Length: 434
Image 1: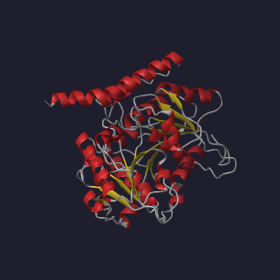
Image 2 (image 1 turned 90 degrees about the vertical axis):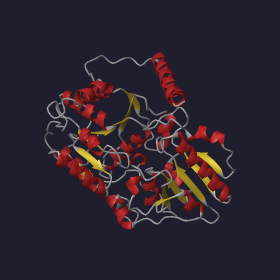
Image 3 (image 1 turned 90 degrees about the horizontal axis):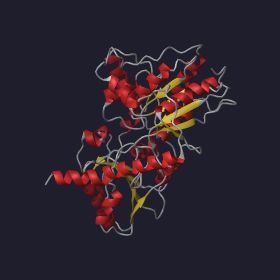
Image 4 (image 1 turned 120 degrees about the vertical axis):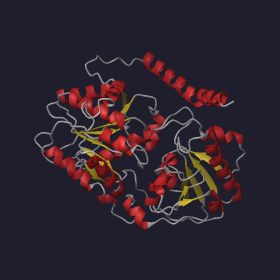
């Protein structure tokens, strides 16, 4: 245990996608006293090997860290936590930037390690929580800190935990760790609309083709405006969610004008030149609003839970392509912004104070209590065993040597899987509809 706030705090971040790595690495820095003399908040990074394992390009584009995280299995990560203690290099804090089921499995694995002193466990959500609220939260219960990205989320999180009789003291209000950047300033001669794409919203090919066609039509209607389609992944790459109908392929059926382009890169850098951010429900909307960039949330495919844009009800941001084509721009509701953790008028620097204080208080204790999740063999005997079995976190099994041949075989298997999801599966579904 660090003897004082001036000692280095060793942090490990385990993530399962590029976006969660970004959230986890940035969160790790914000929840430790990085301004204390001698304090060290640069985390040691790990990405979980699986279907959504990000490529080196995707990890670099997050801008979350100059050091690339190491690819591991869940069991390998737990072995590293155990062996680090044996080396005298114990991790003080572990940030789990993972889906709920994986968080619960790793919590079990950490509890089973029997460490002399376990690390403080922190988890949370990478963006807007618009689905599986109860399920995701209860799977995360047992972590020492469950971060909420806004006052709105903190209230909901505590209501769920208290409503099932679980302790809610782990819920701490914070904010999205990647908000920031220079406030919006219009620039003479610049007129740029950016559409922030999402891999699974909207979900159907017809809806995604519609959105793409409307973007192209908007570019034609406004030849003096640059229309950018901001993409998170290239074909064959995966993010947090599978993308069965990449816009890169759909655009081949169109003949877009010269002022329409596909772009990649760090979202913050794209926002530096954005005059209007348009999306269905991307967290990029909150990044833009934080910087006071005009923002629009589309209703064209409906205001539906499956689209996630129901989260923006009351925001004043809901609009349609027809209105955007006419030059209309929504005005955000200030009360809604305040409840969503968008501190566009200041206060963001203090958004993580409560989280830092809780982590520091836990680190200062002579010992931490056992990890006590809500889901146990008693409360969820028909649910929990399946979750734990899927992850197979057997730390006692000998590690498999990751040879060059093994890496090649693994990449080939990933490629085959992605080809099946993105090419074969849609064809099979279309044949089934005949």
